[in-house]
Amino acid sequence: MEHVLADVLRDQRNLGNKGDGNWKAIAYSTAAQSLSKHFGVHLMADNVKNCFKLWRTWYEIVSDILSQSGFG
Image (tube, rainbow, N blue to C red; front, side):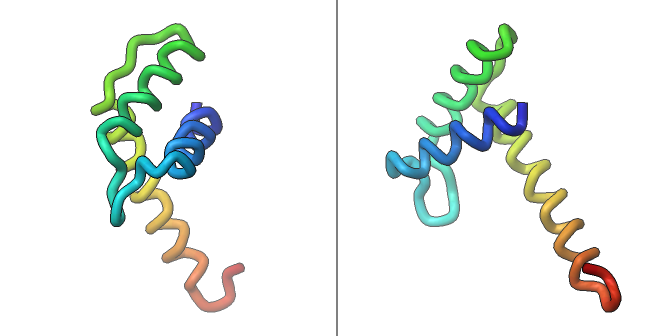
């Protein structure tokens, strides 16, 4: 699911649906529609927002680990 979401968000960014640091509502809605269609589930824009927040958290954790001396 993450790979499909990343592809959709990349496409939305290329269409200009990412503002200064934040995604536009249309990007979340389009991603939710694409994921719903692709996986046969019903997702809302808020589900996509929550997934993206989780990605940020993971990114911060991994970045912190990689910045430790002797790692990476």
